[in-house]
Length: 130
Ligand SMILES: [Zn+2]
Image (cartoon, rainbow, N blue to C red; front, side, top):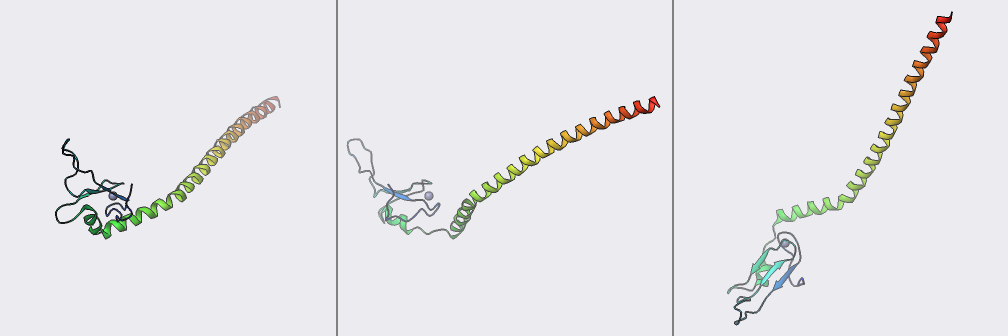
């Protein structure tokens, strides 16, 4: 469960969670330090040590302005995505309509060629009778 006291991940902006499993002497498992903070999105992790707890270290980490700019670009692109997809759909429909019209025009042309050939035969026959 993300902890509201934790700042967003400095790498991806995701929500973070404080993780602490008390040390269990019997199983020799668990956390013998001050716990850790884990990003729920990219799994970036910070451990506490003798100079500070994981929560303090996590919140003290500097944000990367370049990464923030990249994140803003990605967000803008993601916001544009539905518009791009709608345009893509329109283009596809227009392309399908053009393909249909082309097929019709091809059919019309073939009929015209057949009609012309039939007329030429009729004309040739009429000339032969003269
Ligand atoms: Zn992250």
